[in-house]
Amino acid sequence: MNQKYMLYMTLLKARTFIALLIVIGFFSVMAPNFLTTSNLLIMTQHVAITGLLAIGMTLVILTGGIDLSVGAVAGFCGMVAGALLTNGVPLWGDKVLFLNVAEVILAAALVGIVIGFINGAVITRLGVAPFICTLGMMYVARGAALLFNDGGTYANLNGADALGNTGFSLPGTGTLFGVYIPIWLMAGFLLIGLWLTRKTPLGRYIYAIGGNEPAARLAGVPIVNVKIFVYAFSGLCAALVGLIVASQLQTAHPMTGNMFEMDAIGATVLGGTALAGGRGRVSGSIIGAFVIVFLADGMVMMGVSDFWQMVIKGVVIVTAVVIDQFQQRLQNKVILLRRHEKKPTVAPLSEVSHG
Image 1 (cartoon, rainbow, N blue to C red):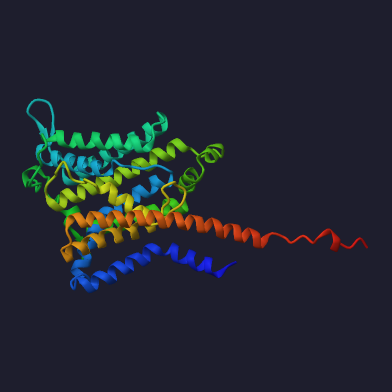
Image 2 (image 1 turned 90 degrees about the vertical axis):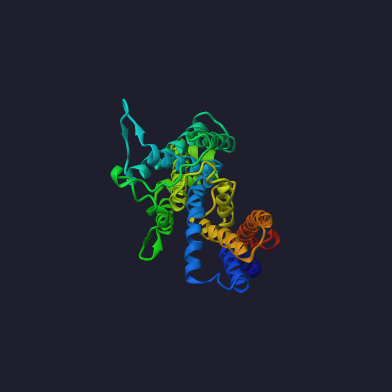
């Protein structure tokens, strides 16, 4: 096989990691404080938000779907937490039940799972295209978040000792062994994603559906259940992101998560997941999240305008898609070359001995 093709394939498969090294190298020169320990921890905490969304998004895209609702779901779940901490749960008469922080987190996470479940059910049971279904859910979740407090925020989510609901700042700003809790959450969900995709039948089903859904259906893959699961998992990741942001700000804002879905999709594509489905890795999406966030934070440290940041991020995402398409064509060419090399040579009839 042509060694040139093999070299190209190796470089293309490692493109996200190479891009990350280039970003780190560039900003370490242009922004002297970029590589300090404290700044790296803060930036990695930012990565955790995009990374959590990208993990759920990767599973969805691997099945050939898309989830445009994750940003709005994050905002909605943050408002759910804010409402529970501020107003509690109204009961009969004038009685109000206030949940502790663990129960608030569980309730908001369940809301995210239910929204994802609805997305998956509508897509599979009613035959609505994932793009249209999740686009509609994005508007529903964003509108519902605005309706919670008439477009206002829930501020000062410190809770009260008398109500037993203090400690909401822990999920967003707390540390364990000197590392922020959101980073631990991202690492935990990364391990879950790797285990699901590499070690379980569910992972094989996810790749099979994205690779060839009709063939997967004929092979007995439970397509409906698998798709509902991946959208519910994506909803859970979005809910956790909403909780993290509200916890960090100690404020639940209905517009939290605006455009988060674009960063999640961008990280997933940068990480090598094909938008058509069937090809990609969760670990690649996390590296893509590092590229997206380090690039954005580096531009902030250099004082680059927000408008130019949007332009540059858009160019990076489009470039990633173009490179992915090039990799796919090159990979097909390599497969053809391998088949040609393995094809047995048949001697002409004139040279065959009739002995």
